[in-house]
Structure formats: C-alpha cells, structure tokens
Length: 68
Image (cartoon, rainbow, N blue to C red; front, side):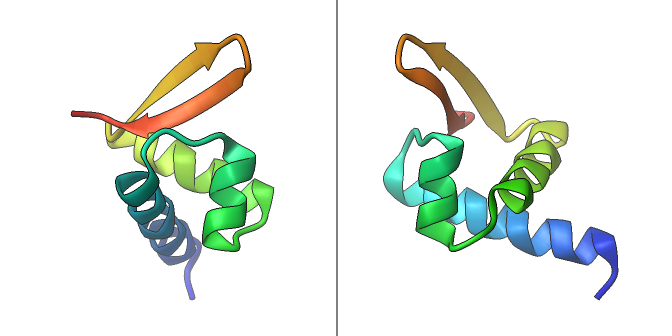
C-alpha cells in the first residue's frame, strides 16, 4: 500500500472513533482504533490538514474532536 493510502485508512479509523466517542485523547484514540500512537498522530495530521478536527487543550491534557 502507498503511504498516502495508509494515512487515509488510518484517518478513517480515527474519524470513526471520534464520531462514535466524541472528544478523545491521542492515547484513547490509539486504544479505540488499535493503532500505534505514531499512526494516530499521522492520521490526526491528515484530518487536521483537511480541516476535520479541532484540538482542545485542557487542564487534563489535549483532546481531539471532529469539527462541526
């Protein structure tokens, strides 16, 4: 598989997890999707580039959610 296909597939998994569960940390996304943390960050970058996620910096850490 080409790198862009891998990132796209992983982005789809992350998008689905965020759609189902709402705001999640990177670690929670990794657990939910069974992706490695570096794969999660690659997918988040892909989704961020497409304008599909928001980053929430809170007291308990960084969360990611889908844009509305």
